[in-house]
Length: 347
Image 1 (cartoon, helix red, strand yellow):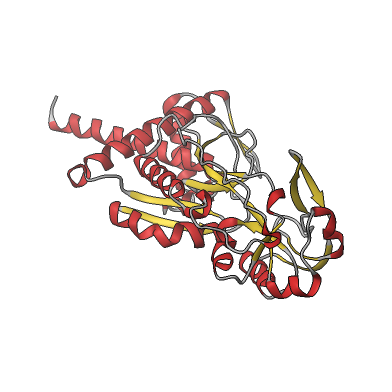
Image 2 (spheres, one colour; image 1 turned 135 degrees about the vertical axis):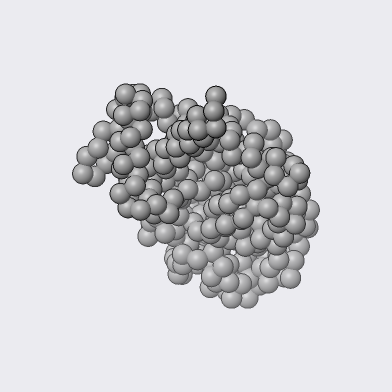
């Protein structure tokens, strides 16, 4: 084969690879203009590329309407294969670069603001030192994002996950405590049981998803019991919520990792430790794919180790000055974090 024939073969392979990249991005962004913007292409380029790709394959890949794109059965099959091929190419190239020194590329992760600020960010430089070729982009927020549409590679989610097309890896269990400041307890007294809370003020927290504040929850005789309390005030920010408790505005109920520094400094005192709510799972989730990119794998492994060693989750910090003189409830044992390929939601 002459040099011209080799060049044509190479150009054809590259054209097909680019077409695969454009096609998968159009599907994931659910739009041609969004895909063009994400890939840095001229506005009409994705439309032309997809038309040429369909002509080359002699198959209609998607049905276009004014608002949505819908894959044909053949288009869905082609998309799944393209995702696998592109991920394998990306991983091979990255593993060969820099003499095999490790994963690289842009990695976008998303996590709850308070969890990220207090648990992840204090240690994030260790990850960056170990994987200097990864361009890390971290998003914080309590609203759930769509990992595929928002091009998020991995997210940390708190709570029970529903079935979805995402893969979840268990990171640990979050323990929730009930606490109040010494000044509050001196004014209103210390409740001995959850039944006493009807005479107390609560600071409630509401999320960006709903303006309705959640009730306090307790584990009573092995079952979860919601307790309605008089609302002193409500806030939608985690840091402000804790500070309301520190300043004596009312009783609060929050994760251990948020309260630990204030419990140690005696700014807050845990109350009703015998009735702590059941622990809540924390998971790392990422989009389902037959081939997980190296940058995602190394971040997952790193975050698993970080959470496994986190004192706020494992209760390596002692909880001081519990009201009523009661002993703390046993710390929940961190579960083994074996990667399980099951489909669970987070977004």
